[in-house]
Length: 357
Ligand SMILES: *Cc1c(COP(=O)(O)O)cnc(C)c1O
Image (cartoon, rainbow, N blue to C red; front, side):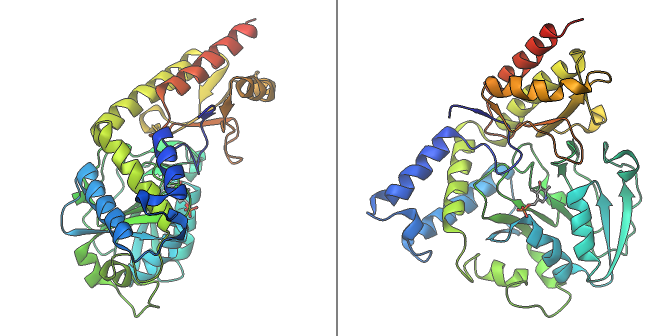
């Protein structure tokens, strides 16, 4: 692709994945049919589902007692489905920003919500740590990477109650100890696929903890037992997700992409810390590898629109910060190359030289 795509989501996908997707739109597997117009109940699509499942398990080291499902409706659908399924009396939530808040709001419809910790006091610029986790909770919910603010958990929490994580924006970007989680879920449009599919990795015993009689489509039992085929799944996004998993495996898997993500983030954060015109917005130890947020330093705020234009002239796309944070956000998802990050860093350097006092 010709531009440096820092969009927060939907976002960059590997060039070869997009080429494979384009080919499958024209002719899927030499079938003479487009992936857009095949039945989801065909042998060819069964093979896509099976390969996606196998690759996801292999790449993230997912044990056999976890099931992977794919649903439409986005991560936002999980915000209400999770409490509908699992919140009988009381659940714990950590509030690390917009997405956590939305999850909390939906959970309150189903039972008591205890917010165990929040970073709202400093506009969500850090990850709260060291909070107590009561043992009488039905589950604890966290947002592992806060796409809007650029904070990320860098360690898997140990929880005495089932731990559920929204990993929409850092899934498969770093190694995760899946056994610490009862459920991991997210929209696929940040790191895995185009918009239209949301994944969940659910520990089997959670299905025995469903606390109420639910509409068929809301119950996770339906989707696990029917292998995401109770109704028509998002065929095309799942196909692209499978191609992304193939690509990830081909370059060396999660361990290799983590190494690359660390290198990209270091390159950009080092420049943010060095460059007199820019500063980071979050606590250093909680900085996200995926969404890198920065603003102009004090006294230089009025240069922001000019920098935006300057970056645009270098084919840099998608670095405008979320309106709740302002400034800039460079989303450096798996498929973004270090060359693109270097272009942004060079652009920041040049801009600072141009404005050196
Ligand atoms: C983007 C995002 C969501 C929302 O996902 P949808 O698929 O649009 O519902 C939820 N959580 C996080 C952390 C996100 O980054």
